[in-house]
Figure 1 (cartoon, rainbow, N blue to C red):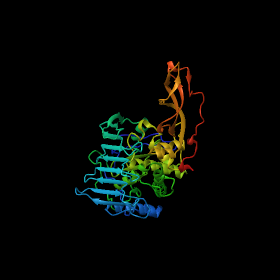
Figure 2: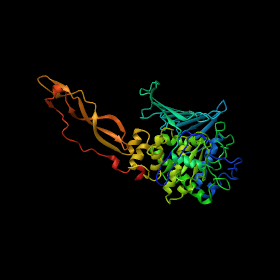
Figure 3: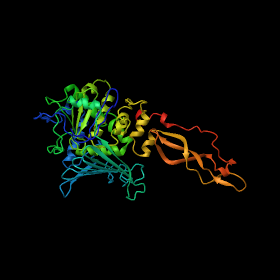
Length: 480
């Protein structure tokens, strides 16, 4: 089995493992039963809301090259054109004012290039290139909201690992310099190995091997974005399970609440939300209920292909009566299946406090239930999920006294005519609720250490500690 990364130990009730690249299931039937249904929308017509069916129909229209309404406001904002080389180009302009907020181009062989300009000001916040087989992904990001793509992340699938190279261009002149380089190994935890022996991934999945990473028979023009495998197919969901999955998918897509799923993400990390919405143009995701293994709650296969598969373990998914917990599980997996999240962010070193966990927790009812101790607060999850500095500020700001650069003013005095600047100073700095610095380098507050030759008097000594506000003790927006 070939895979590139895993995700593990999500919470006591929901323990998840995810593989981001195409792979071959442990056991695949020689002649797997068809997953096609007479009516691909049958489950959604039976259990879903009309607006869900309408949304999926709009995605199908976009795939046919027609104008489509992907944001659900009743007015088409997405148009598409066939390019001279046979590829497709989609343009997303939600404000209908002529300003593009997103562009996606898919080549005839399936390579995808995406631009996201969330506010339509002409400055791209996110640019991504993904090859057909997912072996190469390059992501440029504006990490500080200054309108420049100062971070470039390259992920390359190798024989036994995924190589990650992060480069930084602080000046925005196009000259990137190496910042970090590392490999994500393919070694799997013992629990996963045990599950593999038990054929935990057996289900009605086609082979996703190196030579067959992109199914060619996907009917984008007539298939829902998400299909739930039912009927007699191996690993299928029964009617009770299908109804629960439908509800969780609708929650994850922001169709049940302004405070959950995609709508919450839009208010918290607008660039990531637009990328998620746009990425679904080239995705047809299938969900099965065939995962049967202790300690593993869900898995996502082939996230960089056009046909990802989410396999759920009903023993974990339906153990709880919490609709929010089910929403969290599905939203988490959809962030993987959409291909929006990057490999390194997705549980690098098994960290259950990364951006994917944070967004799915925060945007499923302000959940904080994780396996780590201490558990992250809702403000912390909000800050980790948020994108721009302005979005992080909405989650709360904590002001702290820390070392800052000293001013040039001569506030330290020695003998006659001996006046010098302070050597070591403290100032008030702003941090987000995840403990990361925000904004400027900080405002000077006091002089902690004067030069030895000018230590006779100090105009602004550090003899007191100010009382500073902590907005991270106030409920973040989606929890109010």
